[in-house]
Length: 483
Image (cartoon, rainbow, N blue to C red):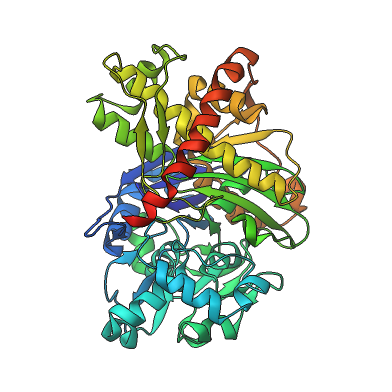
């Protein structure tokens, strides 16, 4: 057995795969996000550890006892700062936190290496500007910082006692030379840091330590090796078999991601498309990111007083798709293609006839339009995309799939283990780290469960709505900047 652990934003998910690479058990434990001020998003790192233990111990004890290795994946960009005692100095600042706009502008102007070596625009979600914000606004915390870790790597430290990370997750800090897959001193120096405050870097299948004895005893397994793993999107791509040039993934989790694998380094920062290392050797990827995807559905669930997201989608399916409501899904600002931390969510076109079903449907469509904006940015950056494999909680809805496929004008492929994609990919990396083999064979795509094709009638209805969606953002953009 091989165990994958994914430190998400809303939950920690675990999956066990057997020697044939088939998922045999899954479990999860919830997490909560704190928003103490407008645009802020934080989590207490102790939550990650509590939820990890809860999720692991929910798995069958007999299966746990057979685990041979563990792989990790996790939400990217989160700034977890530790002091001399190796305890967190403050809550972690998360990927969807927008407080560091001023620091982004300053770093971008001061250090051109963020473009040439970091390979990306400096955006508030990334780790580097978060540390620049701490240096300016919480100088005592910054001065006490001995180690900066990403969320999954803090959990790794508690599991193994080692400070280590992987290149796919660490590329999202903006402190790496992405083409050469190593830390880049000038980028660290721009934030008042040095490599001694960074974990060691590894490829996704590398061993980074052994499970500490006391943790192994509690979890009911041997002191097995813990592999480097990957950032959640790269690990999700590994789980879906998206590793070779041009293969593409769409992730519908808290955020929305379209991820296109590359066999060589490529970058087009001006498009706000991200360029990072993949979690398998000698591969990179281009990625579009919208900050609020399935999280918009949770907002709509509350707004319509619906019991569950599944009920919300069922409610949306009962709406007249020709109604005029349009939803801008910028609940936490936006990355690709707008790089606009100040953007806000908007429900437009409400009339006396607007019912909860119209709101629900407008939200599903609005997220699809936002994904399409990122998709177009990827195409402009040189990605060649014919089909998309779908993972994440949103992957469970055929109705939403029809909307997405029709807006993107591409078939959507639904595969085994899609709903636990990053954890599944982390388990695959653990298995590969023990067994080795050919990369393409070891990470072949899981079996196809279904394919959702674009539908002309839906495309025809949604095309003018998408045009209105785009115009609405451009019209409101100056107003967003004033708030």
